[in-house]
Length: 60
Image (cartoon, rainbow, N blue to C red; front, side):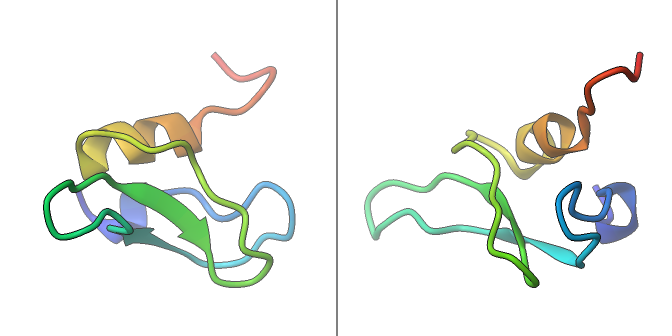
């Protein structure tokens, strides 16, 4: 997965990053907007987080 595969924020249009906010013993991945702080749900892989983030209502 490349960062360019992740869509910009649907709320503010800001740039996003994959973050790993899990602790020392448990890792999970989220996509978080640098502009407004919106984030995806916790996912087991960065690819799952990106897929979830990229979903938009009305898109197939």
